[in-house]
Image 1 (cartoon, rainbow, N blue to C red):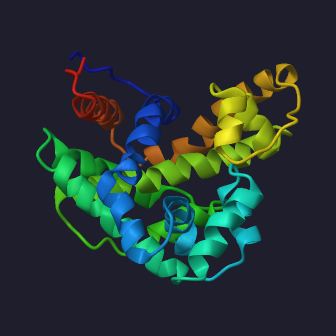
Image 2 (image 1 turned 120 degrees about the vertical axis):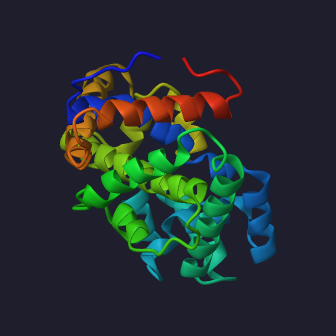
Amino acid sequence: MQRAVGMTPEQVAAASKPAVLELGELFSRCPGTLRRARLLGISGWAFYITGRAGALGDVRAETVAAAVGFIAPDAVADGWDAAARVVRPLEVANANLAECCRWGAQHLDDLPGMPRLAALLERVVTAADATGMPLFAAWRAMPVPQHAAGARAAVALLLLREHFTGAYLLAVRAAGMTPLEAVLAGPEGEAGASACGWSPPYPPVGPLVRRRLWAEAMTDRLTATAFRALRPGEGAELVELLTATRALLAGSPAR
C-alpha cells in the first residue's frame, strides 16, 4: 500500500471517520455482548441504550435522549426506564465496557499493527475537545479494565466514535436541522428513521440534503482538532491502519 503524505488534520478526520464509525460499534453486535444483556436481566435494546448512556449516571431519560440525539426520545425512554427498574445505569455501562474490551482482545489483539493503532487512537482521544459532547466526556472518564492492545484499541474506537457522533449532533443543530431530519437525509432515509424509533409522517427530504452535507463537513472540522496531536505522517499511518483493520475484520485483504 502506498502511503499518502501531507494530510491535514481535517483530511485525516474525514478519511478515518467511516472506519471509526463502523469499528467502534462492532462489539455491540457480538453474540457475547448480547448474552451479557440476558445475564443482567434486561433486553438487548435496554442494554444498548443504557450501556451506551449509562456512563452519564443516574439521569432522566430526557437527558439521555438529548445526549444521544439521533434516537427518538420515546425509544430511548423505553430502553432506559426498562433497564433502570432492574440495574443501575453505571453497572450496565461497566458491563458494556467490559464487553468492548473482551471483543477487542478476541478480535483485534492478533491483527498486524495493533499496538501502534491503539497508541495513535489513544493520543487522538486524549487530545479531543469534549465541549458539548457529554457522552464522549463521560466515556473518556471511565477507567479501561484491560490493557492488551486489542482491548485498548476497541475502547479508543468506541470513544472516538462517540466523539464523531457528538460533533455531528452539534453540526446538525448548527445547520438548522433536527436529529430526525438528519437521519432522513442520510443514506438509509426513512428506514434509518424507523430503526431509530421515529414514527411517520416524516418531513420531506429534498431541502435537507445540502444542509446534511454541510453538517458532515462541519463534523470533520470540529473533530480535526483532536488529530492535531499526531505528528507529520502519523495521520496517514492511522488511516492506513484503520483501513487494514476494517478489511481484515471483513474477511477481505486490505488494499
